[in-house]
Length: 168
Image 1 (cartoon, rainbow, N blue to C red):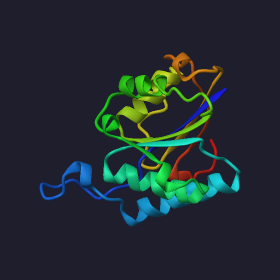
Image 2: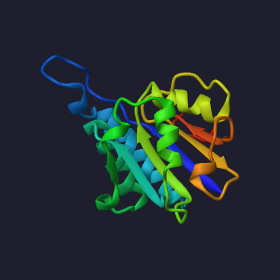
Image 3: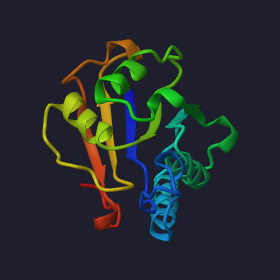
Image 4: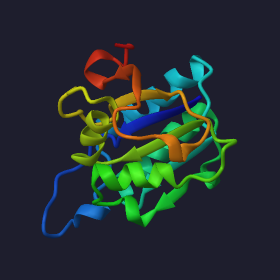
């Protein structure tokens, strides 16, 4: 069994001409939310086998704060340029190419609209547009990451900051 913990990065400062999109930082609320979800997952003894994030500063910072919360070594976070401004199909293809089958719990931190669209692609259910720092956990009854296909994911929980990350 494989699980994907799919996070939308935490809340960020606004876009401006002097602040390029890839360099936007987390707001104070974004930092608090990312720290809180990491701490909650740690309290529930949830561990990541691998954390992967896009190259954008806001996604990297979200990943670091979650990693700190669950006691995952920040130095092991995998930063992927190809995940920045990608589509949901690109995200699925990326997941399919993971060749380490000892990884069972994959934490993936990325951006909307791709994250919300990937939730729909994997579950074939419309959960709407995810708010910043939302988490959707999928389970897949497969042994290999390459076996994950459209509609094969079962949403086992959703957590959003507006509900204090209480499991839905």
